[in-house]
Image (spheres, rainbow, N blue to C red):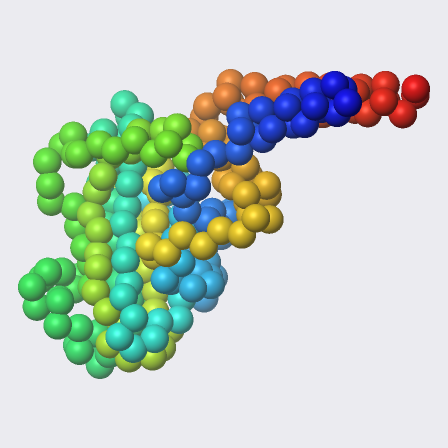
Length: 240
């Protein structure tokens, strides 16, 4: 009985240590840097669900696509990891869609995004570009999920004008290289399965994104040690 209790206790402690809190968490969509055109854009399954994409650009651009329903809200924001070499990195975010559809978005009359977009677009499409015009260094926030501090940049928030496919694009006007995280959606939608799969994977990817290899390696060693202890206790239990 004592061995069973010990096994349960060790397992519980390991899960708590290795699984991040779902607070402030996004579902991570893996990227490989190939989404450099509208045709190769990274698909976001549901823009209302809270997603995050970690990217690095170096004078190029990244595209993301999703299907929006009329009246549904779109929220998207850019944050920059708090790394010394990124303090002045301020990429722009463009919202792309059919020109006649974008003309219906009333919020654009208040937000006043610019319409100069130097990348090619399909015929009949237009882009509204949102730049960061705040102070540097910008406001910081700490995300417990990845145990990382970010600098906040711009965000966009408005309703889809009509049903259709839309795009976001992130680029730097001055071709400055840097890393960013793009967050889309606000609804946190995690299952019990995600708690043991997607969230730990996202935590690990966050560490690699920040070049925090020490934390990533430490987590792997802890997991290996935990599995070893569990295996040993199971072996001892059945041996007797």
